[in-house]
Image (cartoon, rainbow, N blue to C red):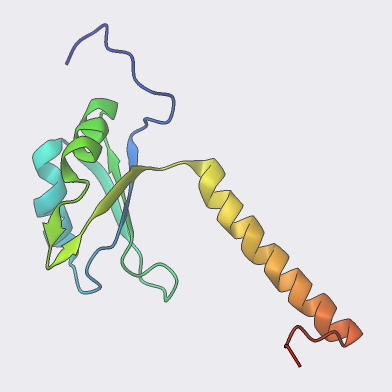
Length: 118
């Protein structure tokens, strides 16, 4: 690690992992990710919408950077991992879009508007 190294603004200690095998255990996650530094927390998605995803929180920002650099594209049980820095703005954007879709559906039902082609 260099003291003068400047990191990109999106780099942070929280890493978002996608395309995980649905049956991966917490112990297997620790085995894969602890090689790159001290881990503070791992959260694995269990709901229908979050299965196959996880958040890994590192103690040090440079460890998180190292994981993103080395584990993106890593093969686990014939699935290639997608490892990204967690970005709050992207996550809330997805939630906002889902809420907008739900609101639109409610309005269509209320006013009897159908989107099906005739």
